[in-house]
Length: 227
Image (cartoon, rainbow, N blue to C red):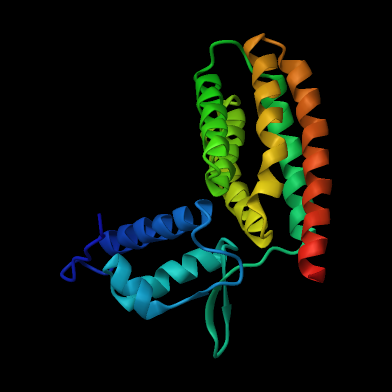
């Protein structure tokens, strides 16, 4: 449903809430792969699509630029951010610190385990249908669920930002099947250990998994840049 702006609303509270709602819509476009790194964002097109004023959209752009999701170039406009190699290295360092610890300290019957299972099932279904961007979205949901094992809303909120940047990394690589296919079964293996209650073993597997994923993506990134 489109977001209709109330032009009679005061500049404070409601206007800021609207900007946050629109910002979340754009974040979802990044997560889904609908927006790609380096893509130019048209104020006119987006304001029409989301049914908000260009002033509201500029506030949204300001918020997302501060988050590192967008970048502004003088006299050129606003673009979806393009991650650097140093960003990729930092993302995976943070992932190992957060995800492995959360997994190691998990416990049976935690609600997040059901979400992990749901994400694995979604990834397998999307793989069968050849919907590789959906496989990527399911993979992101799986790892977000791992962090939920820590029972920290602050940590989950921070990690959501990291996953946004990770989706931008995924968007740099033009072959989503090559990128996501190897990790569907690895997520299944992690889930199996979790369901057996072997959280420490799963955490050790995840550490190796993330190191492998980092090398895999760095190689794919290098090929994409050279190409």
